[in-house]
Length: 295
Image 1 (tube, rainbow, N blue to C red):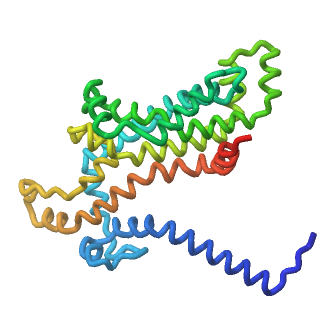
Image 2 (cartoon, rainbow, N blue to C red):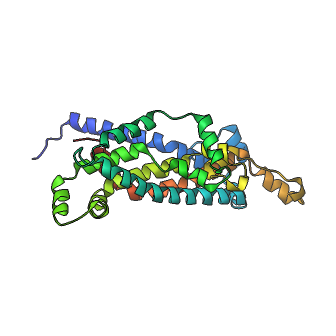
Image 3 (cartoon, helix red, strand yellow):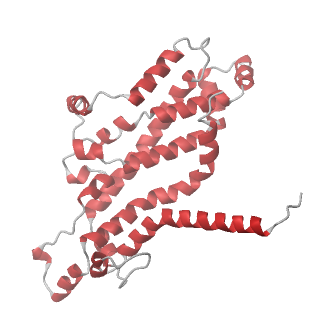
């Protein structure tokens, strides 16, 4: 059908495009502004002259960043943490969601376990009991204290449960007639058919784990064992007088400030998420829509 393009229709579309462009720019502005600061001189950045373009372009902040061994150590810890947490949590969520998606006839205690999950999502035991449990388990200053508390995400489990319930029961029944057991059906039928919601929940978990910093602040006391986001809480330019041996060293220190170096580190810490998101974004809409509606 051919639609008549009246002046009013064209004007409305132009306004809509302009509004979407403005919203997109406002969403990207903090990233662009931060990137511009990281490439600017300390004087211009501190004076507030930097908006979307660098002022007095220089790379000293990134040179200083590449000399910071603690930053890369924290970066690697965060990468390792995200990889291990997402790998284990993927299978835990799948193994929790499959029985909870069964009918009451197949799993009589389904509702009891579901209410326990919902209760744990809404309430917790408090910060002090949590701290005491971590200490009694001997996880203080351990890498696993960054992983174990993040393994079970109830919201993601509920999304996967609802997605499993949207899969036609005929597939389950035909597989059972062919002799397939629960393990076969979970990993050979439900998991391949649920890639949109599994990719969506994995994206949620990657962002959550990458941005989490409280566990490192509370339970890790060694600088070389903290994750990146915890390290970002204490970024400063450390000036060691013993390293100043010439006028060139003085000039170099003057070309870096807390603000420009911090902007460089913030942008570097955002890059992994910005690189991962485009590969999972195509699953996002279908996964969140189908996994959020219960039949």
